Each structure stands twice: as structure tokens, then as C-alpha cells.
Amino acid sequence: MEEQLNNRLYAKMKAEQDEYQAQLLAMPPEEILEHSWEYTAREDILEAAGSGALPEEQAGALLKSPCPLADVVKEYRGQDVDNGHIYGALEDAAKLHMEPPIYRQTAQYAMEHGERDAYFASRKAYADCRRAIEDSISSHFDGMHLDKECLTEVMEKYGSERVSGVLACTIQHKEWDARFSRSNREWAMKADTSHMGKEPYQFLCESHPAILDGFVSMFRREVLEQKRDEKATAPAQHKPQERSDDFEL
Image 1 (cartoon, rainbow, N blue to C red):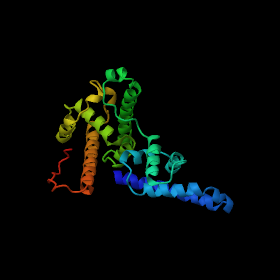
Image 2: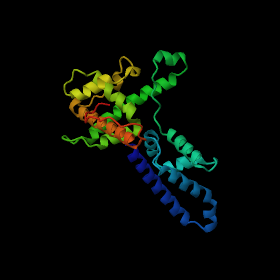
Image 3: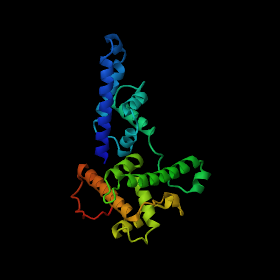
Image 4: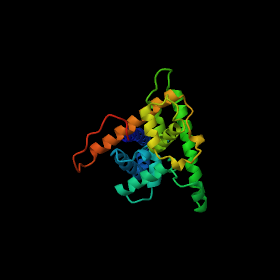
């Protein structure tokens, strides 16, 4: 997923840069020179984005922007020209479109420590994620099959950790429903959703359980593939143990 998001972001930024270049070529030479810094900055940012080094959350956040390259240029303007600052500008621009971080403390802790806004922002994002899952399933289920794009859309916006929380929490409160596979129920019961509260009913998906079960299986496969890819690209420290084909994460 991370590689796919980085590739899509690069393609979107490249199209934005091509359009900008076409606009420059239509200008008189003296006007083109006035845009030389911005053109060079855009090329440097595009090169950095093409490295594929952005975390999934940042790449997904920038993809929400109609003009991600322009957003990064705005954050980059006035900084020294080196890749360290370019990546900082990429991160700052991504934050403009990111969902709030997951808040793991209790409501009481949040009130006592002045973190009320972070607490409620996190809970709102969970509720929005639940609605996004329901809407995506509704849009991508044709009566027989669930399109994989339903997962891509939600993962890009909310990230795997928040999606995992909503799915696990839903199954935990519907463990009795045999329309969820045993494998998915076992996975959900091992997940820590305590930070979502004792009565997180606003976070529970109401999609048809059989279809939602397919979404959960699809999600778990995707996350497992990501972990395998990360393990394959990481420097080998010792001989890895064989992994089963089960979805256990």
C-alpha cells in the first residue's frame, strides 16, 4: 500500500508540474526568469517525492490535496535548499490534510491534562472512519463482489491503524455473529481497543456482517502483505522464521 500511495502521489505531482511547465512556456522569457526559483524548487520536491520514502500516512494525506506540489512549495518557500528541508516541507504539507492522531488516554485524563481537543478530535475521526467504511462498502459492492478499491479509499484517508481499530471494535461487540469468520473473530478479540472506550457504539460498522467480514479479510491480507514487504526490504539480521498463510497479525 505504501509503495502504491507513493507512486500515485508522484504521478499526481508530475502531472501538476507538467501543467506548470506548460504555463511557463507560454510566458515571455523575462517572466519565465521570475519563476526560476519556484520551478527549481518544484523539480527538487518532485525528485524527493519520487524516491518513495514518504510514510503511508503522509503520502495518503497529500493525495487528498487537489494540488499537493503547490502545497509543498508553499511550506518550502523561504527554507534553505537541501533535501532535509524538502522532506520537512513534504511532512508539513501532509499535516495540513492528515486526520488527527489516535488519542489513547481516557476522557478523565484528557480533561485533567488539558488535552480535551485531542481526545474529541480522535473520537470524531474514528466515527468518520466508521462512516467512510460503510459508505465505501455500499459504493463498491455490486450484489455479489466487493471491489478492492473500497479498501484503498478508506486506507488512504484514515490509515491502517484507525481502520483496524474500527473493524476490531465492531467484531468485538458482535462476537456472537457467526457471519464473521472464526479467523476474523479471533483476530479482533486479540486487538487492543480499550482507548476507544467501554461503550464505543458510534464506532461500530452497521454494514451487512457477511459483506463486512469480506472487507475485514481484505484488510488483513493487505496489512499482512505490507508487513511482508517491509520485512523483505529490511536488512537481514538473522534467518527469518517461516510464516504461515494465516492472517494472524
